[in-house]
Length: 293
Ligand SMILES: NC(=O)c1ccc[n+]([C@@H]2O[C@H](COP(=O)([O-])OP(=O)(O)OC[C@H]3O[C@@H](n4cnc5c(N)ncnc54)[C@H](O)[C@@H]3O)[C@@H](O)[C@H]2O)c1
Image (cartoon, rainbow, N blue to C red; front, side):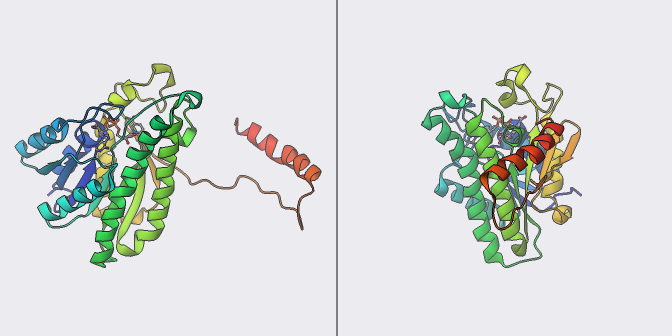
């Protein structure tokens, strides 16, 4: 018995990297998987059908159930086809894992509108597109007891603001907001929504200069570690967890907090400008210095 027997799972960007390792584990644990991958270079150019079909061949040769899909998840209708493919091939849909991503790293002053937009298109629009189509399907099922899942991929790059990745950081933080919103909206339809903030030695990390890598993402960090965390969240057991960001890097699993107020100042009926500046400097400044911020 696998922990995911009978589950039907769509994974975007799963022909290689973290998505690939995850698709293999989910299939080995009994899930029927739809392996979506546009087969693009790291910057999103030069698509090919290669990675998705190759991984499907590997999974089916090992006795697993998998079909390939090469739709561009940044395209709204194509993402709809992807969701429909899972339902028509395997009869239903239980889990969507939004892994697909690209990088176009530039400092903000060198970033073109095209490189800004293309990164948002894949990460943010892609995550919205599949989640939208899947949520329409789940809402129609009207099963509050279902154990359906949306599992999104965010990044420490957004959580801590990587200076050379303004487009990627913005997209990844946007995905956290989308995760919180879907978590609050879809619970009543039997869907939990959580985000993974991963660290794994893939080609994506290989493109970042060593000294700028965060989270200790060294060669020893196999994507298999991340895959196990996704497998648990994809299972029926994880229904107690909704709207969370979970770090998964090497053998470390992290529960992140949501932004919470550190301190508050209130004036009645309103602030005078000089008191406001005085009080902010007196109260907030030492707090930030104490936190090393
Ligand atoms: N590797 C890390 O340490 C790390 C750290 C933080 C966040 N992440 C995130 O984890 C996810 C996986 O990253 P990875 O390291 O495995 O990257 P990767 O480049 O190895 O894999 C990403 C896959 O997405 C596919 N893809 C890109 N655009 C697509 C599109 N429009 N439609 C369908 N498929 C598309 C690519 O072809 C590729 O196979 C990404 O969302 C990434 O931002 C990774």
